[in-house]
Amino acid sequence: MSDDVRARVAALFADVLQVEAPAGDARRGTLDAWDSVSHFRLVMEVEQAFGIALGDAEVTEIETLADLQALVERKLAAKGGA
Image (cartoon, rainbow, N blue to C red):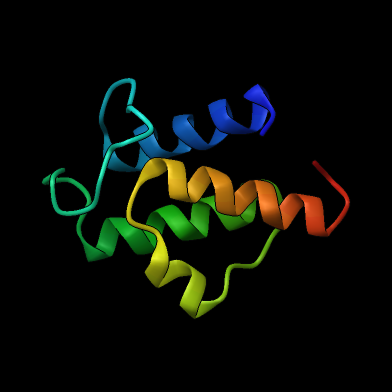
């Protein structure tokens, strides 16, 4: 994954969840700020920022920041933008 994509996703993650410098292993259930509402907001922000659409099954499989970063990379590659 490009460092730029990884950094942009991490910045969105930090902004939505209001945390500083999240690690790739930041995990749902271990961050108080990462609840169902913030998960939905995070997905919406990522979709808008990258011009991609995430399916329901994909959204429910996101458990870590690294999962989200990898998913964005796959979506961008599929549309020819990575």
